[in-house]
Image 1 (cartoon, helix red, strand yellow):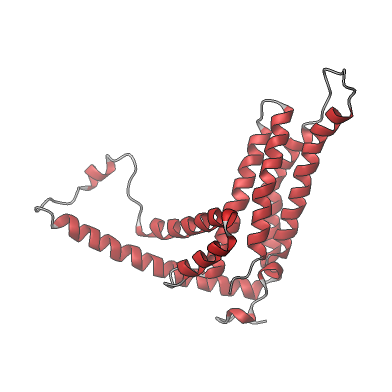
Image 2 (cartoon, rainbow, N blue to C red):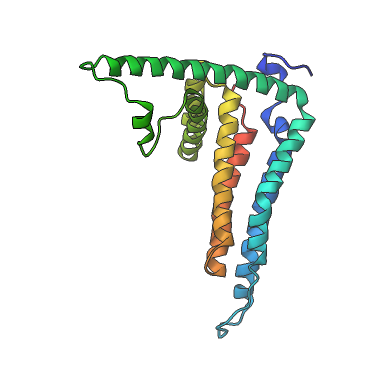
Length: 233
């Protein structure tokens, strides 16, 4: 396979992200096993037992190893599909440049509007530095647009996948975002939410709460599997 602009020549997303999908499903199983190490001893204890010894270590272990597991899987997928990765990188450079151009144009328009309002001068560098939250640069705005798109698609997918697919096409219509780029960002958004839940499990005040956080991570990780497997073209 050679790198090409024709999406039909690229592998299906479930092939392109096979190692990541496998790692995500492994992580789902590990979360369930970690929760079981807490709940199963309680279920096996006699009704009169007040203090039941449970094992919270698996909750801690899955929390500590999850991110590295997913990073390793992504790297393996990239190595297996080097031509597809090269095409994706070229697409990302094109869409990033387009987003930067739009952000730059918007910045010029906003500056023109500000400078024309009652001859009020634009703020100086010193005045801008006094703001609690500085305005993003053109490059930062371009990067934020992609993150925002992925997060929005992830949220929409939870309630209405068909509507989420329509949103992906709508976001990609202007040429500033690519379909796979949006879906990949959505995968990251879902997986990150799951990883954050697992971090909470590591610092939970009691074993039952740790188990609950492990289980709450599963729905987010399962959504990441769906997004990594889905072709919408």
